[in-house]
Length: 147
Image: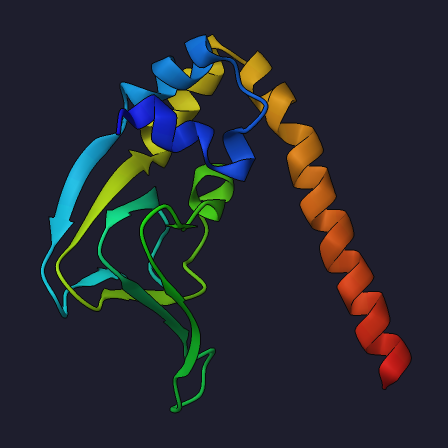
């Protein structure tokens, strides 16, 4: 699968043109992880976004406690770490390869460089980010109403 095809399947990039996807796709690198490898660690500075090309990844969170909670098990075509592209803040979860896994990786550095030369990419992403924020707000309101 071409890198731009993998990016096109990601909701965050779904409004981008083929030309813009190709630009971002040139910045994507392939990374291989062995079973048991830690791909990212909760609390570390976020520097990249991942698309799973093959394999499986466990995503978990300790959130300051000694007990780790499994958040998700992800497979081919799924993504994690997209907030790294936007804010570079600390990771909110740890991701480990459950089997030999290949990921397509887009660094924040490369992503921001593309936004500087093509700011319209950010404009195309804003409606998607807004929908995500509205969905979270609705979930929080629903949770508050039930408690």
